[in-house]
Amino acid sequence: MKFNRICVLGGNGFVGSVIVQMLAAQGRQVRVLTRNRDRAKALTVLPTVEVVDADIHDQVELNRQFEGMDAVINLVGVLHETRAGRVDKPSARRGDFHENHVELPRKVLHACAANGIQRVLHMSALGADPTSQSAYQRSKGVGEALMRESAMPSSESERWYLDGPKFVHGYGMQTTIFRPSVVFGRGDSFLSMFASLVKLLPIMPLANAGARFQPVWVEDVAKAFVDALDSSATYGATYDVCGPKVYTLQELVEFVAHAVGKSPRIIPLCVNLSYFQAWAMEFMPGKKLMTRDNYYAMLVDNVCNNQHPAPPNLQPAPLEAIAPEYLSGATPRGRYTAFRHHAGR
Image 1: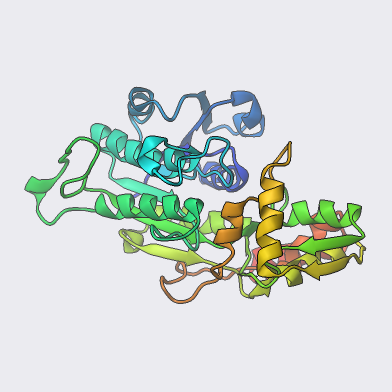
Image 2 (image 1 turned 45 degrees about the vertical axis):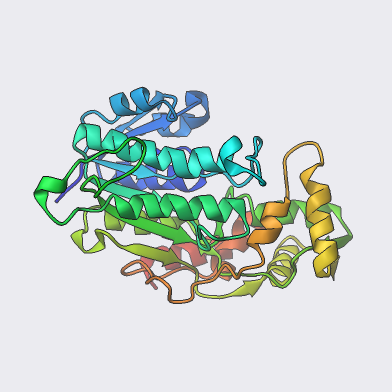
């Protein structure tokens, strides 16, 4: 089945903007819901894209915006909380993680049920686990579970059941879940952050230096979403999305430093000092670079371990072929390697 009218939540974000551009290039009608239309100006010029100011956390508004859509792509996620939930008694206060990673997917499924939409693609994260020490990973894990519970029930008579805020047998959705490792590309918030730091700091104390990641290019993640949209073979599937190589955090920082022509002294911190650095940075003013929740998340390797398969036909680009171009400025060789990957050579 071809899905031609797609509503995208998080469509003006880092991964979302690439997905929207790919969908528009295929001539599909795309509705992007955003809190600030001015931040999505680059998408408004695309001929088949409609950017709408909307409160995606308002169930009535979400129901209205999903009218006439064939499919929904949910990409909403937050890395840091500005409004945290209670650790000792989570039911007492809901934080940003719970609101965006648990309640929003639930509302998306309700709105889909209300509009007869069955196709949903959902962005989760590698390491998502309802039992994780990290609140981010716990909330992502619960969001995944909600999506799986919404799958097509065993008989037609069981479809579209609702029981308050919970599911009974599912909404009859055909869901596909993606769990990427850290995503890199021009405009990312991971490698680019370290590029800024190594330019400023001759000495860099590094928490969780041995944490392992398998970075994946933003365009490979976007292509996995777009390729899966019409593929019935991906219905009900969960995919881990990784690049071709595993790196420790220290190796990634060293790679970034080399790309920008710097050579800071990197000092790996022990467990206790890593926690203390995360605690201190959590309470620093301005944009958060690290929190204690990040520390807990990095205690588990962020790599593909065959828990879930890779997306069909994924041929991920190596970090070395893409990242130097945007970290150090465009170079002829950087553009050449990117072109080669796009051409499949």
